[in-house]
Image 1: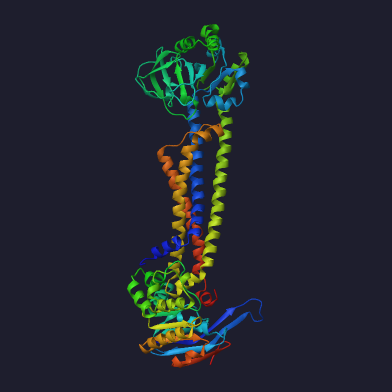
Image 2: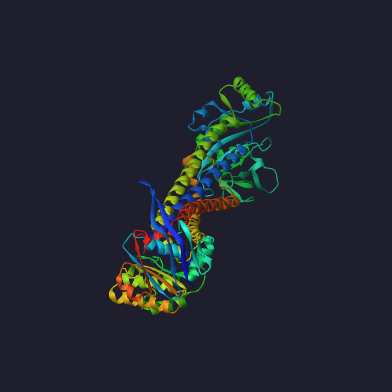
Length: 220
Length: 401
C-alpha cells in the first residue's frame, strides 16, 4: 500500500500575528512508496511532523488529499478512519507514549484491545523481537527511555501494518538501540511496508531509500 | 486484556487516589439525596399520621396547659401533662350548636416499665364516645373495651390478650394501635374506671389527689368533632367565649405551627440536597475535565492507535459511570443506615413527628439516590468526554510532555 499526499498544505489560525494565518506546511505532493524507507529531515519546527501527521490520518490538511492506494483517507467517517488506522497504519509517536495504567504487554496489545480482540500472542512475539519480552508485567514508569521507545515501536508494529510512520523514533536512544530500530524499520520496508521516518538525525540516511528535507514548511 | 472495559478497570484501579476521591464525592451526593429524601418523607409521613391521629376539629385544654413550653408540638406528639379541668365543661360544650361528637381524655401519669423503652403514658378515654383512638386500632379481639381492658400503643411490648401489670393491678390488652412514631406509641389507653383504679393502687398521693378531685370529674382534654355545615372557627370561638379557664384550639391551627416547622426543616433539607448536587456536579465536572486534561496525550495515543471519538467517549464515560455508580451505591447504603440509626435522635432534635416511610418508598429513595448520583457522574464525565473527543490529536501527539 502506497501513500500519496496530493497538494496537501496545513495552515493554522493564530491570533495576535499580522496575517493571523501561520503556514506549517506549504502546498506539496508527497509519496511514501511501499517497500521503501522514506526519511524526512529538517530542523525542529520545520513542519516535518505536521506532514507526517497529515499522511497518517491524524491531522486533517487545510487543503489537498491523502490517498492510501485509491482510498481517500479524509473522506472517511471518523469511525472508518479510526479502524483504518488501527488495521493499516503503525505509528510511533514522538516522545513518551505509554499508557501509564497498563503494563508493557497490555500497552503493546492495546491496538487489539481497542477492538475487543486478543492480541497478547502477537504482542508477546513483537516484544520478543524488540528485546523487551521479560518486561511484560512491568509498568511504564519503571522503564528506561530506550525500553519505552522499543515498547512504542513494538506496539506500532503489532498488527503488522502495511504503512509505518515514525516520528523521531530514535530521539532518546543510545547508538546500539538506534541501530536496532533503524534496522527493524529497514527490514519492514524490505518486507513490503511503506515506511516514513521523520528525524533530525543524519544517521538515518544510510537506511533510507528516499530522503526529503523540510525547511520552514517547504518540502525540498 | 481483551476488552475496553478491562482497560477502564485498569485505569481506575491503578490510579487509586483519583478514583477514591471521585467515589467519595459521588457517595456524599448519594448519601445526602438518600438521607435527605428519607428525612423529608419521614416528616411528611409523621405529619400526615399526626393530622389523621388528631381526628378532632377542636381540642379544648385548660388554660394553664398553654403555658407549657412547645405546647403545640408536645400535645401533638403525644406528650402528656398533668393539666386538668372540670368535666362539667364537657356537658356545656356538648350542648353548643355545631358540636357533633365529643370525647374526653384524662392524663394520669407516665410510668417507667419494662414493656416500653420510654415511660408509658396512662390515659383514660371514653370508649363510648371516642372517635380518635378507635380508628387507629390495628389488632383487636373484637370485644368491646371493658373495665381493666387496655388499648396499647405499637411500641408497648405486648400483644392482644396479654396481661400487663401497673401498680400491682393487672389489665388485659384488648387492642393494639398502629405505629405513629410519636409518644402515642408508648401509651396505654383505658376507661376512666380502670385509670382511677390504677391511681388508687399507685398509693401516690399526687395521683390520688388528681383522681379523687371531684371523684374523677376532671378531664385533661376535650376533643370536639364539628358537624358538617358549621364553621369550625365559629364553634371554637363560642367555646372560648362561654367557658372560663379553658382554651379551645382549632387543630388545624395547632398543626399549622408544626407544619411550618416541618416545612422549614423540609425546605432546608431540600436546599441542602440541591446545594450538594450543584457542588458535586461542578466538582465532578472539574475533576473529570482536569483528569482528561492531564491525560490528553494518553487519549491522543489511543486515537493514533485507532480509537474513534466514540471509543474515547466510551472510555471517559465508562470511567465516570463506574466511579459514580460505586460511590452512589455506597453512599445510598450509608444514607440508609444513617436514617435507620439516627431517626430517633433526629426526631428528638427536630421535635417534629417523624415516621419512616415504608419499605417500598425507601427502596425508591435508594434507587433515586443511586440514579441521580450516577447520572450526575455520567453528565460530568460527558462534558470531559466531549472535550477530549474534539481535541486535535496531531497537535497533541507532537507536543512535548
